[in-house]
Image 1 (cartoon, rainbow, N blue to C red):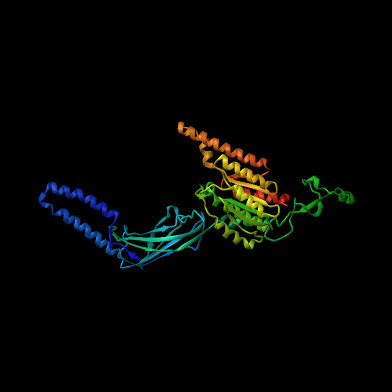
Image 2 (image 1 turned 30 degrees about the horizontal axis):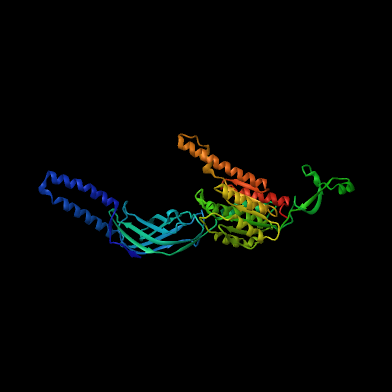
Length: 446
């Protein structure tokens, strides 16, 4: 580790020097013959700073320990270890601090600052848990260490390059949640593969009619033959194709709740994909911006879920408008049978919305489409706020106009037969799972 200058004064030393200056001026005014006291006082302070820096000790070794993998928006602990020799005393002003220069996707602003706590042997340790805010590979660029002596007047510095890398994956906290695991174990789409009876399309068996059943399912011939009411049960379809299509353009890169919208969408999609794989369906991912960026083959088993996670991690961020016409036409050309297509997108102006509606309308003719967008809570707050001045009034009117445009776009999509999910970012995952399960029960994909 490369040491910087032998020692530097701390903020505490600077305050003492600043306080000593008026004392020296006062002495010069009251006793001009005692002018020698001022430089002596300065030399004493300088000597205290130097002695304190010497007592701070010498850095022997330092290490940065980072996890190989983190999840976007999750917790990832970075540990800094430092060993010192010749460190004397542990006064109340003695401190060891570290600063890390990181890839901005690993920590806000690309900087993490942490304090190190030590023991009598001179080993110090500190931890920081910055939340990664973007997927991809991040690098720890450099480590700076600063440690002070027992008086807190002198500090020593050291710096070195690090080079450790961290892979930031999509957030799968919802997939690991106990609530979802219990649901998958106990609901009709359980962990044990079995034939699922419900409101599908393939005839399964006859069952005794119970109050509340759909009367249209009564088998009148069998009921007449047995002199008792019987209803038909159908097997819910399996092996359906589900495609999650991600708009990776500019609007989806805007943050919501501290994370880009695309990352919120990826987490919701992967959670639903996990449920779909457990239900016996096939899942693929498709990403696009100005052109198609990602197209995975269909995954049909839950043990291959990691392939979807790895592919989702490669979805990049693009500061450009998406080309819905090219992207969705490419997607339609890849699909040889009727599928459920879940489109994650957002829109900022009527022109892009019009192109999006036109392109999605072509998909509806052959496929079942769900459009997922995150409610703009910031616009809603501005529109609902009581205006206190003309600027606030103008902002409220503009926000209300934009919300009306959003409502018009979603209304037109529903008229085309698209199932639209518009909800706060924290709810789109559960809303999407509910929509998928409802479609699954109705056998509407095949």
